Each structure stands twice: as structure tokens, then as C-alpha cells.
Image (cartoon, rainbow, N blue to C red):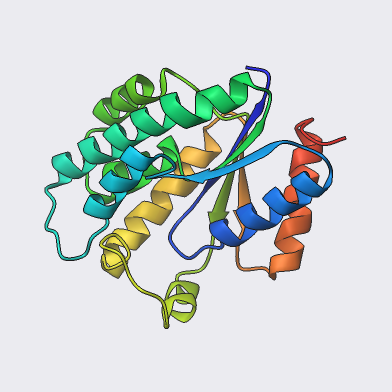
Length: 205
């Protein structure tokens, strides 16, 4: 691929969207052709699936949840991410395969071999050039979400969040080109840290 694929991972309300938007603006100002997208979603079909899987009024069985996420990912990857990378663009994506491993694997307890196989099928084995994993103290989940709408996954209990957070840390530590970001820090400090990582990985000069 001629472009670069950067993924923002981490628990809900950890600042991924804020930093993805800041980085998108920064790169665009530097003259890069940037695509900012998200999962589930990023494509009209995948966005329809997102509206189903995250609707708090729905009770979705764990395996059905997994398959919905993978269907959205297959559509998104093949219709939006890969074409953009082939055109030499920088793709910034909020969430990707690591989220499924953390939420449906560690959180729901679905066999990780099944998840990894489905991830490979949905993405055609496309791997990020850099994965930024935002981890924060659980106290900020409540503080940052006090006035926010909570989707179905955000309404899971603290025990689920602890398992999911453990998953992110363990997966990040053994994933190539993954960096753990301390998301408890101020927004400006985190942005500077991201720019240093992009430079370290050769994405920025």
C-alpha cells in the first residue's frame, strides 16, 4: 500500500475521537491527504450496522454482536480503507480489530482464535502501520461521560470494563507497531506524544 494506516484504539471516552480529529487537522495543514474514519461505520452500509449494534434498546447475543462488527469491518475495509491506502492517503481510523479482541474476546469471553480468524477474513489481513492504544483510569469514564449519551457497549458494568481494559493492555504489549498512550494526561500533552510516535515510526519527518 502506498498510504499509511493509523488506528486509534482504547476504551470508550478515552479521548480517541478528540486526538484523531486533532491529528487529522494537523496532517491536512501539513499538506497530507487524510481520511478520517471510524468503526463500526465509515461507510453507508457499515453505518447502518453501527446503528443496530450500538442501539441500547437492542439485546444482542454475543456471537451475533461479533458477526455484526465483522460484517461492518469487511464493508468498511474493502470499500473505504483499502482504496484510500492504494491512493497514497493517510487513513486515521477510530477502532479496528483490537477493539473486537478486547470487547468481544476479553469482555464477552468469545474464543480469541475465532475472533482473530474473523478479523483476518474481514480485513483481508490488512494490518495498521501504527496502532495508538489509549488507556485511562476508570474514574474518567464516569467523569467524561456524565453528560453524554451512552450506547449499548458504554452501558456495560465496571467488571466488563475491567476485563476489556486488561485486554487492551495485554494485546497492545504483544502487537507489532502498537504504542500505549497514557490518556489521563491533558489533551495538548497527548497530542505532542502522538506526533513524537508518528515521527518515530517514520510517518512524519
